[in-house]
Length: 246
Image 1 (cartoon, rainbow, N blue to C red):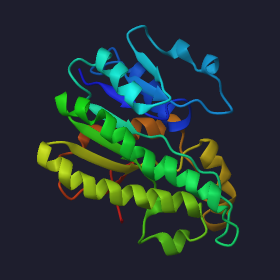
Image 2: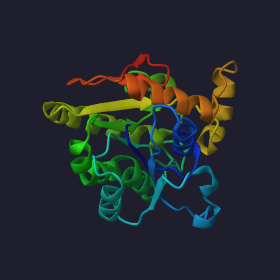
Image 3: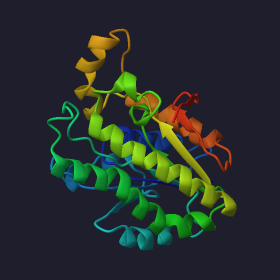
Image 4: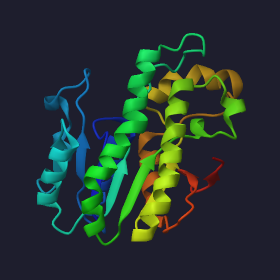
């Protein structure tokens, strides 16, 4: 049965993905191996471990190298799905004139630079697996083609995710040579901490558009990941499976 490792599994979409996998564990899914990064708002004791069966593993990390060693112990056949979901957005309402550049640097580190380290550390386990999929969660806000229509929406977040997109598209062409599938996708506008902060923006421009639930996003994301095929020139997929413009 396939194995999963999800980053950013302490809340939001990441936690939704883990929860969905665990609900399906009695069918064709195996319990995931989840990485979480503690935040100032939540402690380790608050993590909903009651959702997890004894056969699943949570890797509480400070360094990704440590996580690879620990993951290797519970994944002797390798890692089928590496889902890089972790991300931050600290300045959703900032204009180009008010962006805090120091904060922006932290957003870049987490959203664009850290995924390089995550993939590098766990790639040896992915290579050992049967499925061999690397997933990078992006956003429609990163689209260069759609940028003029979303020009004031979460500016710094979109920029960092655009960086993630070019990273994914370049690296995917290299991983393709090894038979490793790279998947880049937009999980939808989701009812999460981040999703709530942009409600007013959407209400002014498209009041009929509503966020989807975490559960719906997680279900859709897992379906897109399952159906993704090996490609050299990867696409940016929506949670619905539609192709979005880069």
